[in-house]
Amino acid sequence: MDFKGFKKNDFQTFTIDGLDSRMEAIRERIQPKFQAVGEEIKTDLSNTLGYDMYVHIAQHARRTVNPPKDTWMAFCNNKRGYKQHPHFQIGLFDDHLFLWLAYIYEVPNKKEIAEIFLDHTDDIRKSIPGDYMVSLDHTKKSATELGSINLTESLERFQNVKKAEFLIGRHFAPDNPLLRDGKTFLNEVKNTFETLSPLYKLSMRDSQ
Image (cartoon, rainbow, N blue to C red; front, side, top):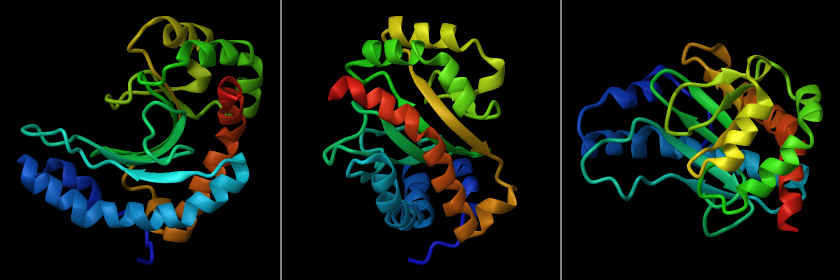
C-alpha cells in the first residue's frame, strides 16, 4: 500500500457505535495504513537506534464489549511483544494523532529507567523541544507540554507508583495538513523519533 496520509474519516472511526463495527473500521481504514507506515519507518528507526526494531499493530483482542477509544502501532526491539519494553508509538484518538516514546506500567525495570532519566533531566530539557508533550497515562487523552511540567516530579511518580507511566512525544490535530500528505508525515515521524532517540538509548543502558 502506498501511504497517502491520515484523513478525517480515520479519526471518525472512534465515533462508530459497537465493538464489532468499530473494530471492522479500524481493520479496514487504519491498520493497512499502519502496515504501510511500519514498512517505511522501521529500517530508518533501526539504523538510528542501533537495534532491530519490529512493528506491532494493536489488535484489541481482549475486548469483548467496549469498543477501543484509540488504536496504535508500536516499534520495539523485541519481536514477540512491546509492552514490557521501551517502544515508540503512532496512534489515533478521535481528536488527535500521537507520536510517543513510551514507557508504560508493564515495563519491569521502570524504577531503574526513571533513575537514569532523573540523572539527566537537564539534558532531556536541552535536547527535546519544550512543546513536546508528556503523558503519565497512555489510556488518557490528556498530556502536558514538556516546558510546562515538573519533570522531576513526573519521573519520581513514574519511579514510585506501580501503575505510573511516562510517555513523551507529540500530538497532531486531525486538521493538521501534514497528516494528509504521506511523505510529509513520514518525514515528521522520522524527525520526531530521531529527536527522542537519545532518550531511548539512555533507557536501554539498564538492559545491557
